Image 1 (tube, rainbow, N blue to C red):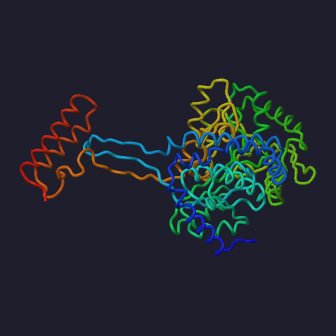
Image 2: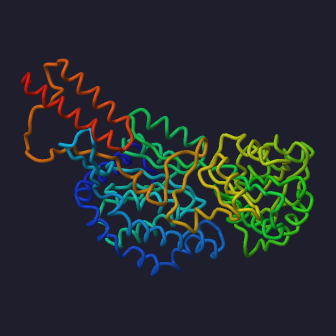
Image 3: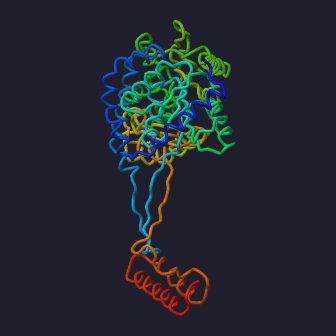
Length: 494
């Protein structure tokens, strides 16, 4: 049943009521309530994999390796470190030795999470879990193409120990997501297209409420002249085509050193032709996605580029395609996200040119650098404008390393999931400024009335703050303190 404006408001209202009790718990209490989640995921592993494979179409091996196993690792990570990350921390300051600061983390309240179809379990899981641990209530709006996966996700998390109403599922198309944002939650998390992400931002700006966006990318593999071609072509053949190329971190472009380009293309074309489409390749999720693939490949052919593969195969499958040739970097398949089993290959002559070609895009999610010289590869990786860069690997930070944050820059969005950053992004910081010692000490030297003694003290304090941590710095603090005490004795404050 479609969710309209009134129904969306009801979801948010119910979440707001449920959040009061959930948010009032300590981090440790929330972690304890969800402590059984990793075991629960293991118990339901086969069922989750089956529903993902049935509804999304990806091979069971990918559903297991790319979604369920990473979700278990992510749950274990968040539960293990949440108390440390979100717990209060003490802060002291040399400029206010009579005060003590506390940095605390507070939940936003109600979070609306809008998730896509391509990773229908892992992405919403990575949105929902840190928000819950941080004390928020969540309304999840999955893709209308994979609602069954989201139903299982909500059921598993709730059964692990979540109070009623803290996590709700709102099923429907984009209009449902829009209605939920218009209902005025306290934060919105969105993963999807750039066009829709802009609409989400515009709607959230009316309140305003914060948003976290992951909007995909046109990710690049940079292959230096000393790379192992056998290894790299296997990595690219997988990195461009896992999940049928329908992953925000799949390789869409390859920059190969000119000395390797011809040999690289021969090996890559041979390897993608040998992919077992029936067993290993996910189909297009729907006809709309197939249309994007066809449009980009037709434009490449019209531009005179060499296209290997790209033929339709049984239903919504496509023979993996490799696009190359002069002018490929000006083509649509290079500049825009194809989100399919299509990869474009271009050459470069120097590291500087590779960096310039990589950074000549508004996207910036992930990248890879391949080289026998890891030190050189690391230096080049640091120059690439991307949220994460893997050296001699592909998409490793998304699937195998829950401790590392995930997210991009530019048109690829902002905000982070995974790692401690996800927990921090799910909360806002409140600072408590407390007295050290008596509840009411002396009146502050900078209260009214002002006099020359205050100026002298502030000059001494400025000098001491600018000095390094040496005896001179301590001497400056002492001088500032004596000046302030002398001022208080000469003229009492109001």
